[in-house]
Length: 340
View 1 (tube, helix red, strand yellow):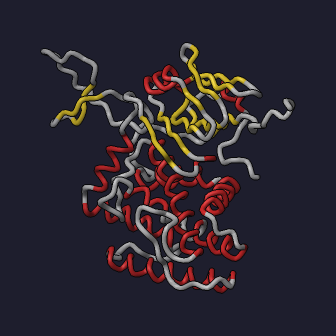
View 2 (cartoon, helix red, strand yellow; view 1 turned 90 degrees about the vertical axis):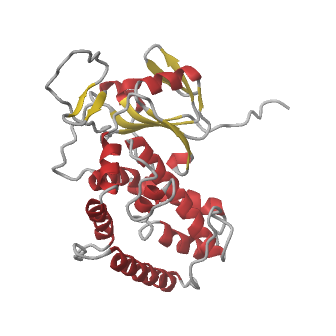
């Protein structure tokens, strides 16, 4: 199986000068030792300075103590409980000191019609490379997307010789409706949603503030996932159906291996940050404790302002997810066969 997208040698952690994007932990015990979290498994023990990590992803077979969670929260590190290699997102917690720059930017964009339309067009531009969508309305964009997806289903059907009779799915149950192909599509899409959810939460953005989708707590997750379905979940579902692999687990593990091979999560990180804070946007990579001011914009927090005047205003902060992605994975569990 291909190495997962953020894999690096865990002992390189202490040489990183800046906060890394994420640490993925699997089949290990996570505890606290002073100002570091300690990842322990049968093969090795790794100390991780909590302040260096933007998000810690806890995979299967992981146990974590209250002390470790407390330290990560105080350090402003997001903790996400995920499926194997990030497939599926189960829960997340966010520390109180984390910057809210990306979230504020997202809320500003989604609450203004012109800016929201601009982000939506940028999302569709990623699906229609080389085409001009700068003047297209949302209705026109939805229509073009519908045509694109219909042609894609037909092309995949011809490529694999798997019959295609239309999309059928049941909301809230990823593997409940339609034929085998439809159920594989739903299962693969559900896994992709989990991956996108983990990235969005880890960056400090809101899963619920969507630009194309709206009304759900995962609207932005659906927006981002739609960027990759044509490349990942749709071809995967047709390939699995052709091979006779029709279980939900087949779709989940198949997607896991493809995202690991292509390093998709790093691409999702880049795309989310580019959509919300394109080049030229002033979002300094610092953490700030600020108070809103109707004249100055923001003033410094944690200060007694009784009779004080401070003309300097500070700016909102970007949570800052870099390009380093690390993993600590314990050995496979084995059964003891020595006893009679």
